Length: 219
Image (cartoon, rainbow, N blue to C red; front, side, top):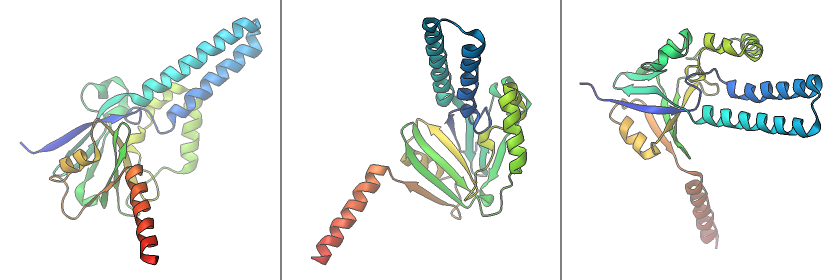
């Protein structure tokens, strides 16, 4: 059986389009404004309702920001991004799509340490990724703002490449950068470089040592 590596993706990017979480506070703010203007409740009742609404917003954002999805698999041929198993059937037709990134089409793999685990950036050669027109993206975002359920007909953010450089960004749970590097090393061909970005403390200590070394040399 061919060796492969699977990991859990953190957050809502495997389910919702990019930027979807930012719309939630807008919806709740609109509800609060309508409640205040149209409902005209007593001041003591309005404070209670607004506080409960804010608590609901924070709870929903926390749940969606920390949800775990089976949406990352890598093997000797490349990387698959997208929901797997029963989750693909629960979230609409767009959730059944996936992105396949063969290793020959990958320029570099970057790994960075995060508090939840590790962030993986799969960098593509310049000009190899295609993006939707900004006007179409804006129109899609407006439609999603007005009709939240329309997210079912949009591609998840995990499957949409980012710009400058073109890359796919995957936040992975419960894995350290070194563990991720060791897991991917047998799968990634020699032509694809794997870079591990150290933690900010390590970078800060490294810069401090370099400064001390320069001061010692100058003295």
